[in-house]
Length: 185
Image: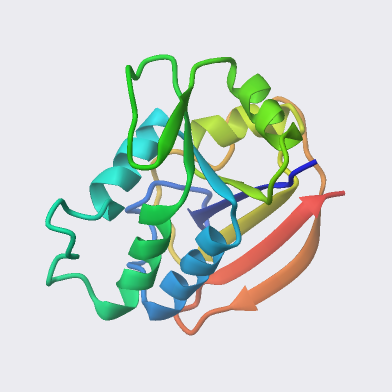
């Protein structure tokens, strides 16, 4: 069975809004590029899909914007070319190397996990909550930001039952960010 990894930036007080942490730097972008490259396919809900598409889809000109730093381009290339699945009952269609999955989120992801292939990666806030509650996430990677946001969506907020995790790796960045990797215990 394919493994499913969930990775997200999170502040010290649990906020996982994409603008709550510190701005990405070269070191964190290398981390995120490696995350994308380790996945056979990416899974998004519609909100995360639209957000990522607006930020990281290659422009129609075929050239990345001049204001994009050279160290951001490997991530942009990786996510732009990745195979994507979008779990949504509200979208009519998707493109950007994506397939729309309209069934129950947990059932859709369970089906993907049972298909042949490499690891899957999920991002976002709501979809990972539904998958964690069904025990479908095999690995959690949190980039803990040295920030107290004070507001915003919280990591896996609303989880009905406790999930015990085991720390399997830790990486400290120069910025003060700490990448923590966990597996269900």
